[in-house]
Image (cartoon, protein in one colour):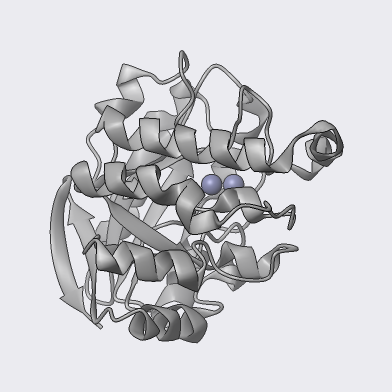
Amino acid sequence: MIVDLHNHTKLCNHAEGEISEYIEKAIECNIKYFGFSEHAPMNFDEKYRIGFHQMKEYEQSIIDAKEKYKNSIEILLGYEVDYLKGYMDERVLNADVDYLIGSVHFIEEWGFDNPEFIGNYKDQDIDLIWQKYFDAIEEMAKSKLFDIVGHLDLIKIFKYMPSKNINKIAKNALLAIKEADMSVEINVAGFRKPIGEAYPSLSLLKEIKKLSIPITFASDAHKPEQVGLYSDEATQMAKSAGYNECVLYRKRKRKFIKF
Ligand SMILES: [Zn+2]
Ligand SMILES: [Zn+2]
């Protein structure tokens, strides 16, 4: 992938490695536009994100890296923001960054992608939680607060699959994403999880293409060695869905890049 906008730093307490190590791996992988999107602060689940008091430190360290590496790669600055009602904060939503990724990691405050709480799946109607998840994605798009949809079908992470047709469950969410003029990332983190495939699935990606929704790429690296992994699979998948360009953002303005 030539663009990779979703990567973390050790500031979020569940990633490792130095910013420079992530960037050097990206250069090695021929990534031309590399973005950091740290888990934005919020007053919930504080253990897995930076604090509000670290925003300046985070932003400045990425800006410094942008300058340092400007002759080899373009570094971009973003946040991955949880769409969670009652917890989103103006300091994040109005941050002076290149883009905001909107992600749903909670269904009614249940951190469904966290292995710590995997036991909860046993008590759930799987069709219902899939629908609740995509309802949250739809609401997130309708909020028009974000540029990119993070890992669109993350709810498949542990392979608890619904009996209903997934494209149908996701339909209204996709229409809202189109209406909000957002982009969807092809996020390869799913290859590292029980589901063993990218977010979104190829089947959903084809629906996304039918709606002419732009795409971008995401390593979602939490370690330097995860940068650029499964890059060929991601590019191949985008091509087979009919894409030949992806997007990046500078100061919340979208730009298309051929790949
Ligand atoms: Zn993370
Ligand atoms: Zn995420």
